[in-house]
Image (cartoon, rainbow, N blue to C red; front, side, top):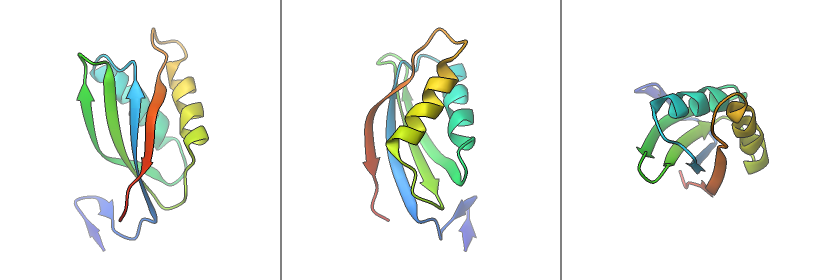
Length: 94
């Protein structure tokens, strides 16, 4: 069943804390990078621009590894004055 755009049958949920996030444009770059991963979508995020961090809450219909997300972040950093990196990576219980 789908509610609020979320597919409840998703097999994996993650909290990914990312560094060097200073503005909404950073959030959008990272969101686009995560959405480029097959089966991944963001259902929420919490940005703290003063601390230069953002927590992204990801749901996926497949198991996504930290390395795969890190590669997407490195690609998102290209051409930007930032170096986005994962600070913490947690699998959330469903």
